[in-house]
Length: 125
Image 1 (spheres, rainbow, N blue to C red):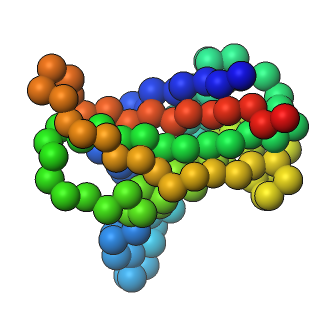
Image 2 (cartoon, one colour):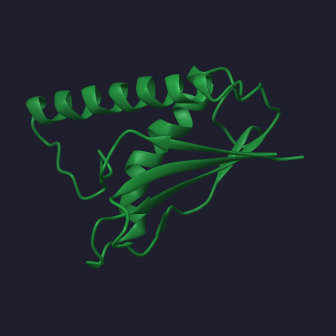
């Protein structure tokens, strides 16, 4: 079984390229992580994803244009999304026996669609 959860962001809220080296920057980062976790946990609950023994997770991003982007930078956004699976009660923990994930995917822009981020959660058997 598989579920697709569309995220409420037009671009990834976090990137591995972000720099949070000051106390104020770290506070902004922490607040963003909390917001992502809360937003995604609510979406997961609304999707009625039942508790799972194990899942596979992958973040997808279709930007509004086809500039070059590094998919690895999306890992900073994917991590709080995985944490949200625990917050929503889908898995008991985000460690190896319960969750694995793949590198995020950046899709080509489509002129008829705007930017969108989505999470695919697959039941592992």
